[in-house]
Image 1 (cartoon, one colour):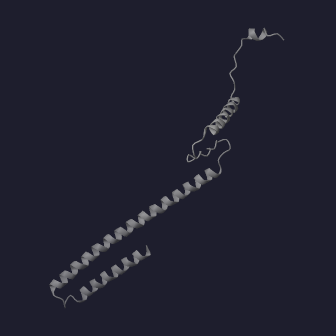
Image 2 (cartoon, helix red, strand yellow):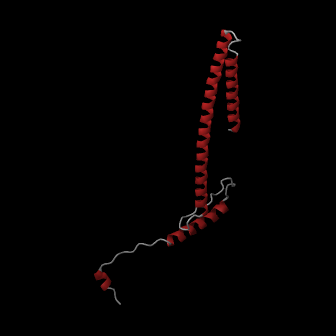
Length: 144
């Protein structure tokens, strides 16, 4: 942004220099040339104002982008913290099986099926089995 501000300052210096030249040489120049120089100075001044507006707009845009970058950085830090400190009671996602493996032959497929059956048996043990309810009379009728 420093370069743009230097350009603006240089542009303003040139305009003021042209204005002073016009004021000092008003007696030596014909009216037509004076009028033309005045129009050119006004046009340069208008261009300078547009340029300053563009620079201000770019500064505002840069400020907003920096704020957005800070927000993203904060979010990134939060996500990284959450990733590094996952609570023990939250289940972790298991890694996906590679799909680019060659097709399994029948012997391998047969080996996989009993393993899966064992996993089913193990998981079913962790669940509470159903229990029938009995009445008080039935309970008292049980021999001791």
